Image (cartoon, helix red, strand yellow):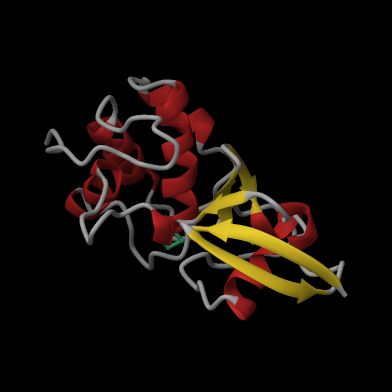
Length: 167
Ligand code: FES
Ligand code: FES
């Protein structure tokens, strides 16, 4: 077992974990943060996407021990005082989800895009989300939601500014 200390969504956790434990399983099974789903376990679907020290990663492709000493932000850490981010609200208001299984990963990947490129075009949104699969094939509204939120999220280390989302 290896001792790790990791800040997840603003809370510091210390645990002894097996070196082979995936970060995705650590988040879900050990910490109970089931907002990060596992869709494939083979780094193909993007459902498990989280932020690791500012880098967007698929948590099924990272070991929990690799997150030792790091800050992890999951989709559950985005809202502040119960208020959704502009990006989250855009997904909600523009019906950018069907079953919702891919949604956490889509939001984390789109959040990363908007930090790098606050006003992306449709093609840039589609390119940025290439690593995230939606089995319900609801891509049109997902792209619309990201475009609607563009320019309204900031890159302030995990804190988005909640502003009105353009329709
Ligand atoms: S569960 Fe990690 S990419 Fe599919
Ligand atoms: S909304 Fe069902 S997988 Fe994307």
